[in-house]
Length: 219
Image 1 (cartoon, helix red, strand yellow):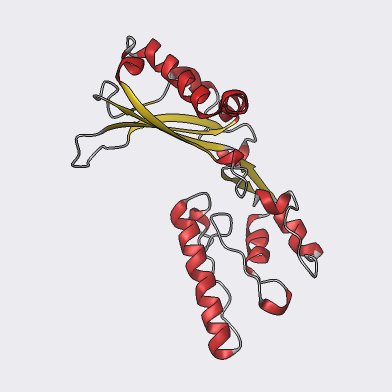
Image 2 (image 1 turned 45 degrees about the vertical axis):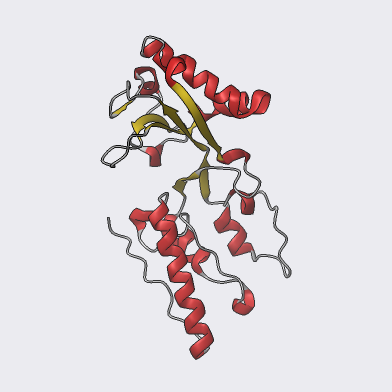
């Protein structure tokens, strides 16, 4: 959605005024994930750093400043000898990592996280660190953001985005265009959105028309 908002794709003929308006009704939030492999699990199942709670709000719909950061054991419930700690960051708390990435790449981000973990776990993070993987989505060429944090005029906006472009040759799908109100912002919502578009294309090929999406707007 961020790519569309930035107008980085040229459409010929151009997008309708309705479609452009709908695209700009989305509020996007930065998001990153970092996976750190260690020799042992010294960090437990999951945790949130207390200072992050100042920025955390369960009412993400009402706050443009919504932000969160969480750590968890990626191998929890799995049969494995690996020890992998995951960190997910969303919203303005990502800015510190984006700045580090711009200056020093993945290494700068990982070093910062290890330093913080060392202060919490008596230096165990640096001592036991094996390798890491940084997923800096705001810096990915064809992503440039995380996912939707809020949709203005939600029902009308999603309905407009679910319609194909003129000549019915281009359809949009993804977490920002859900088939159920509770699904935007989630991977499974993106998958179901894609499945619904595939249905429309098949129906269009077979019958010359397709049934519109029947969005469930109740929680």
